[in-house]
Image (tube, rainbow, N blue to C red; front, side, top):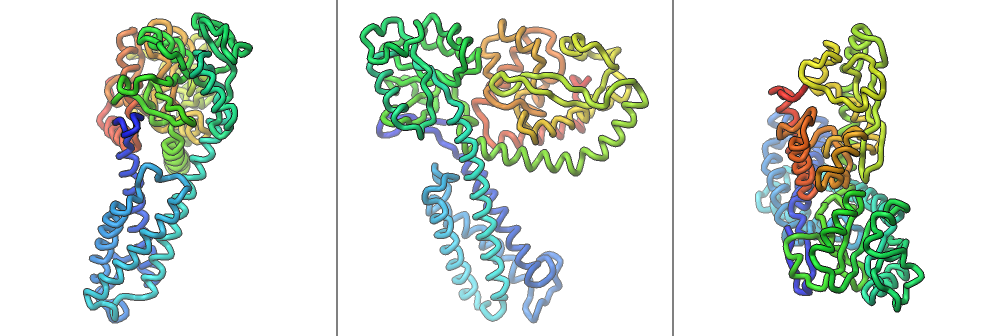
Length: 481
């Protein structure tokens, strides 16, 4: 969701992201409350006897509810979860300000109830020490991960500027004189540019875009054309997105972009991103990557070992060949990676395995392979891909390299699905678009779901897809073969 601010610049609300941070903080507070109770009294609150050191333990239950409500109220009043949440500047100070208000509110609550002779002072000290430390550590992890991802993004952003006029010149000067923006300009494209101050950096005309992007690495394109019409911009965007290149525009008329695009501030310029992708924001990347690491570790430690022991034995007993099936798939930004699965088919020549999808009653399937596919257990090794960073828990499913090359030629926006990491599960899969894509129409519907996911990503959206995937696993999927 976007709106135009008073300066005519587009802003994007991240309400769902702030709600997630609030829920995580509330969870941390309640876990800290229980842990402090355990440290002080050697039992959890719900396990304790009615009397504990002469005081009824049920006085702590309303206190926990009061702490939760007070935190939500105070944090919202002080705007703890504002647009800059997750960035270092001023946020730790605001955090401890809210903790101070919370401590005062708790003291007022205890005095008002006349319970200052009953509540354990040691428990209160433990609670505020544990909760403050946990909240601080959570922010340090998020900020550190966001900073790391931001530095990686900046280090790799080679940009091509389309338009060598006055706007293009000024933008080049701004990013060249301030490396904090992380832009490295490789050159310009312009149909004229004879009098331009950056003429030596002009690599060709607008019609040379595909040739230039194919001959050297380009991460982003900035369109700085003063009078570019919609058809020209649309053509340039299509050409760039087919090569997984993000496109930004320096607009003359902000109203034309109202409610459609995300903006990035670069000096005096406001860059309008031509395709909204929330995961382009380092803070969102950090949140998603943190969840991927935690979730994949849980799966690999708890679920994978017993499934591996049983599956490996049955795979070896039912057919010759390796336990794992490894195949090159298309990943983020069009790069290829080795994707792991449990082998579910008889050992086949590599050229056949890399080009032919599974079909219903496929004769190549082993009986244990059929079970693994129906239960999605064959995908479990991909959590190693998630831990390595090749994949995410949720995202567009990775396709074989041949299918990427085939479908990118006939389906518009096909390569947009590679603006994010591929996933073990995805929005298309929980909407019945799993399995073989035997027609361009079915693939096109899958791509529409993938693009919808990329443009509307939120952490809650990921959790919804994971939950629906679990339900589908138990309910059964007719396309799981």
